[in-house]
View 1 (cartoon, rainbow, N blue to C red):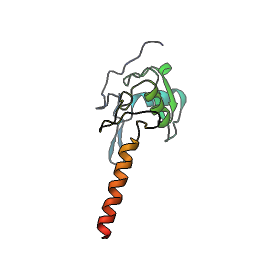
View 2: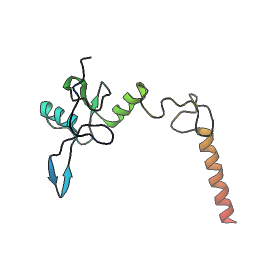
View 3: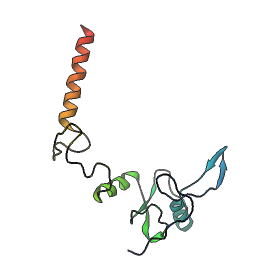
View 4: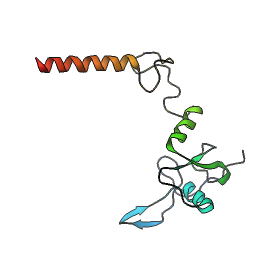
Length: 127
């Protein structure tokens, strides 16, 4: 992969390049620079699409590092590269080990416990 071209202007708190365009409907309009770079070369981006960074560098505006996809594509990319906040976890907050059956999105033992507690509360309220 070629080197990144990093935006040297303003950044969001998340580290993405932004530029002040003006006011739209009374609100400040500051689009992401990597989206503007993509649109300048390729045109319109559908509202349900995002511009992805193959290099994982949020400041990068190198067109050869950018592609369009969905947020689901972006999340899959994050997980496959180990950048998702759950990627490195081996156990849930209560210490249950994540396995193929007990995946990282929902800890099954914790979910079962919450369901039992919910049903118990409903029984107690009905009594």
